[in-house]
Image 1 (spheres, one colour):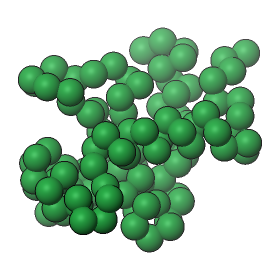
Image 2: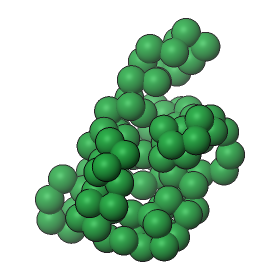
Image 3: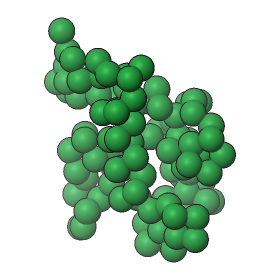
Length: 106
């Protein structure tokens, strides 16, 4: 794992679960990093990771519990999709003044 990837993953973990953030305004807590798959079985690179709590990652209401298509269907009425969660994750890393140095590796 490169230094850049390690730093990026640490910053992602500090954001808390993106589903909990959107639904309940909870901005911290332990997470697992989920790879957004854009088709097929291969995982994307580390910049396609979404921080999720255990429930929203592997639980009954999570991506792996519901399946990727089921997850998007389950949450579509709440405006949540995996793509939206990734976009929000990237936006938080880039725009949050408190996290402005997330991409500085020095």
